[in-house]
Length: 209
Image (cartoon, rainbow, N blue to C red; front, side, top):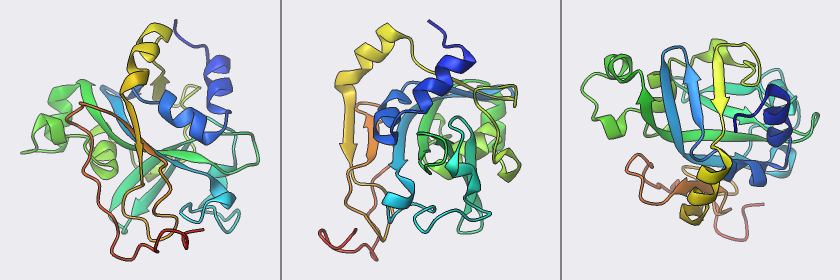
């Protein structure tokens, strides 16, 4: 069953740790390229020291406060665009970082955007995923439930059921705060899942908020 716009937004309006695994196996389409998501990370806004929205609403993080279903895009290290899908109730900042996926449509265009990369590496990592899809900072606020040119399609019920035993959870990548919260999830057995790297600046377990 394909979700209607209202049904999709209702799913995305649920708590972020509930939404994150539901995005595994989902298809994200931007223009002519589609990526099947295989790895994501959850961020719980003001309740999460690892989130950009931990200190409240700013011009940069305003999109994270809702409504659910919009993209929150930012530059990582001033170079790579990263994209999140905003989740949860309107007014409560939360988002799921799109970490990795498999290109399932538009492969020739995707290869042209990342020349020399192996197919498994085209969208293996949040910056690579955005480059492969053509997602830029201009997509910040784009509505994946509307007519923004960015389309999110969740797995059908049977497919989602089949994927559930393959979902794994572990710590998020590269964080210095709340580094040990097991809020990254991925599909076991997928070669596109990125390699876990703990930040050398990560605070010890018990001191991460």
